Length: 247
Image 1 (cartoon, rainbow, N blue to C red):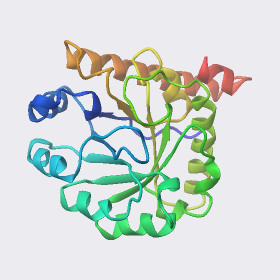
Image 2 (image 1 turned 90 degrees about the vertical axis):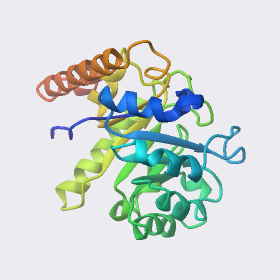
Image 3 (image 1 turned 180 degrees about the vertical axis):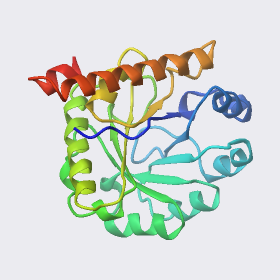
């Protein structure tokens, strides 16, 4: 079983204090955040309305790490260049929200950004079959998109493991590196199982923002990731890999 890439923690601004976003991103980055995650919702594809490119542009000078933009909007193609110009480094979207998934992924890369595809809990991994060559990131939703603070859906673990196998097989055949991100209900008490299942990038909102001590939460998340690595290594030598990794 291949070792996982180094883990990235991407705090989601959806749970931050919107009255002081600049301070929030500076504080959470100083606490050890690897990326900053933007949840962009349009009250059309999902039943909520959040932030647009102007917010991204305003925060870009305050953020010294990659900006990870998750577009929960329909259609997506008009907003891709807008967020790229606003300073996004990674842009992901849902296949259901694009008329031509391959073209939308190419558009993201043409804008100089990394490209990702987001799969809802009920969306099949088969969407990946014909676009692996254009992906830098696969994001699996572990809640139904639209609102922060939801509980992690346990069946996401098996889906993560299946996505990890696809990525490992792709890279073994000479394909580019692809990160495997998970978003929804990630907490210190479940991140070990999520890591063991194959995730390498973790979006966490309410688990971080609003807590009294950001460095302590980040430390707890890192400790869980380390535990997940141990579970994964143990599983690779054990009789029942899935049971060992996901317990």
